[in-house]
Image (spheres, rainbow, N blue to C red):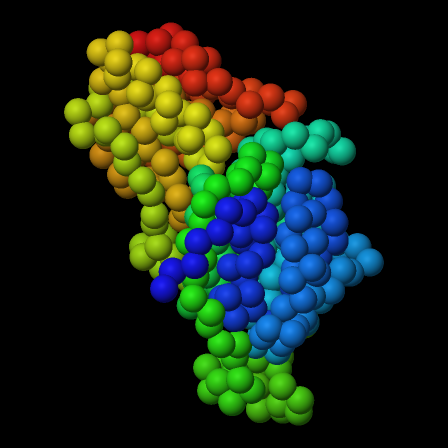
Length: 357
């Protein structure tokens, strides 16, 4: 029997992580994602499944605890919000280089700097382009509901282990704080030590002299090895792009204009589409669910048919660059956004689309 609950997005992703068989959560409080840590502390999952929950002394400490747990083949996760994510970037880059899976949740707030605790989507570049140093990528999932916060916790762990790389849920203060009915996933068992030895042969467990030193290493004395390694990572990212693109289309079949939006902006844009359709405007909504891999091919196909795209974001325009690259100059691509923690209204989206026509 399915279990239904009324939960905040932050609570849903925390509960779903427990049920996904997470071995350990390491985090640090920051608004608007603190409920993830608070829920896990209150729920005491160590009594339910044996999952460890620890508030680290900083975001830097938290991501390095995740690094250590992932290196041992464990399902581990962390969460934060924008300034905290900035502090985690070095550790995330190291984990990408070491090919270690983990789940990261970013409930985005306004910036730059300390900014505001209000919702934003200004971390798109930081999340989809790597964020830290070096040539690397993260699998990036963008939920637009509390249900997807729960669903993507399970999916994120699955994809992270499938490709041996960090997966990131890119949420925002709206989705993290809002309450909706959610169907919770069934409980998965945590990995046994035997399963770790069998299924994660790359993991460090005690004395492993026969294994590659992939956890912490330096290849700076042999540039050819480093180039081989980075090219190997790139081939993996190409496989992710080939196999894991996810998106949603609403009323795009006959659309002359398409709004492209993710997360809470997609919810607002869906109402704008309804308003425009009522006025006789043929407009659709294209919602990227994976921001990496970005759904370039379907957008490129629509670019051959439609009169224009409007990228709606709670930022000055970041995803719009990927929409323009995908459209390849075949049609107009414009941006509409609000910043500073201001959430755009459906009427504002309608007006922005009208200007595009």
